[in-house]
Length: 178
Image (cartoon, rainbow, N blue to C red; front, side):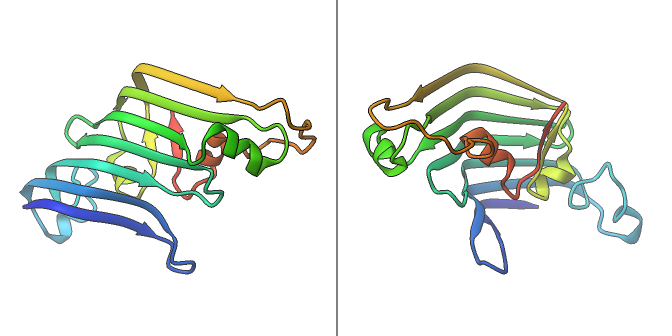
């Protein structure tokens, strides 16, 4: 079975918020066996012995709306339990000065870029449920830029859970490496 140029969305049915969206999505399922005996076969993905999935652009939304989480050119090979991503970006949605103005106090603004990500020994069933459970993550290049405007008064509120990497961990997507 081949699916070409589809769109994938994970939506919270109560709030109607889109947690994750991806397009175009291409799927190839090989050696399908749709029967009772294969419904519990953990070596199969969607009743297929092998699944190849590619997504050109994936966006993960968050409640705070301060950052955009984007992943580009993702491929999944179920036989190899391998997921690759050309780029993983955590982009601030505001310029440095606008970010500082919105915060009103000293606040760290993160701009993060990873290139050439390779997720090995991936739990494919969990990926299809929207979770990232992998044994190993290798990244070819990384760039992290942190900006803080010290012209504003110090922020005395705890930052625990408010930085972009911590917000990513609080999304409806489970992330586990190792």
